[in-house]
Image (cartoon, rainbow, N blue to C red):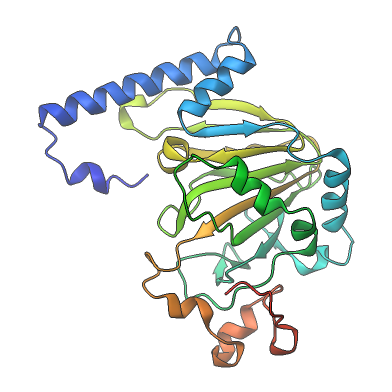
Length: 286
């Protein structure tokens, strides 16, 4: 967690010390209540909502879930277009801004490097109008420009022991709300705070049912880290974000570069769905 904001204030300021202590006390109380076995599930999710984490159960139907799982099924035509994340043992697919970088021995798309071109969203997502429906669910969460123009799809294989450690979702380059759709099986989802004053505080662990949607904003988005531990069943996750094209990236122009202008070394690392010229449709997101 970045402490830059903390370092820019006077640590001896009574207002700052009082406010921060109050915040930590509330956060500690929420974590403790959520982790109590006697706390009803409805109350746990109400407390999580106060931290900015909202869960919508049965967001998609069983039929829609089956269609999405089939689209990215192992050994299917789309599955081979993904790449293996060797560090976390998951199959990874990237839609939206393509930003190649070598990481953990795997060529993948990420942020904080020069982007290439924006690819189209997969047909399975557009046919189900997932982004439009997520925007409607996220109304009132403080993000008036919820483009959801980037999508990460992860296939977690139980046999491969797929998981992902605690992390933030690119706080400096993504706007507002992050939305995640959990498919094929339930999973455990963990949240933790990194404040030194909360050292030793247990993480918050909750179960995401299959076909559920979560929305992260506020404290859960910018202050807490989240992760997915090892799971005993195969699972598909879809994470939607909105790229801040004119913010920390510095220039909107770099998000609309043409294929022909890419340096050969960069173009060679850009994997599907980066669209070559003959496939660039009018509906590509620029």
